[in-house]
Amino acid sequence: MTKEAFIEGIEAHADTMYRVAISILRNEEDCRDALQDAVLRAWEKRETLKNESSFRPWLTRIVINNCNTMLRARRRLVALDEVPEPSVPPPDPVLKVALHTLPAGLRLPLVLVYSEGMSYAEAAQAMRIPISAVRGRIYRAKQQLRKELREE
Image (cartoon, rainbow, N blue to C red; front, side, top):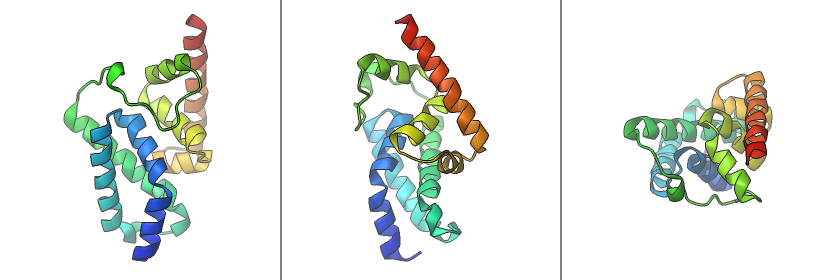
């Protein structure tokens, strides 16, 4: 991958990388750190990308890994009032609260597929899980959201 193609890919997917990172970390400073590390790691490992058409899921996987590493290293809780507003806010504040109650394993597939417009296959590749697992997690997330929204 050429330097120009790499830069172009990073610029094209900067918003996606940010939204994925903020959905996992829920902290602006941590998000910026994770994104810087992800871009550096992607640059260093660009030779491992076998197919340039898979750049987006490959890059998303690097962002997810960096975010998870940061979470493991810091092991801290973030209060709901400290969570920054997402770049594309949910249309309903009740839905926003319900989304934050979902575990990361269910919330992340929803963000990738519905907010980022990834296909199930791209989300599965980014999360390194089978497509059937993505479908199942989205199904369970929707069930939990329905249950949560009925209670309110």
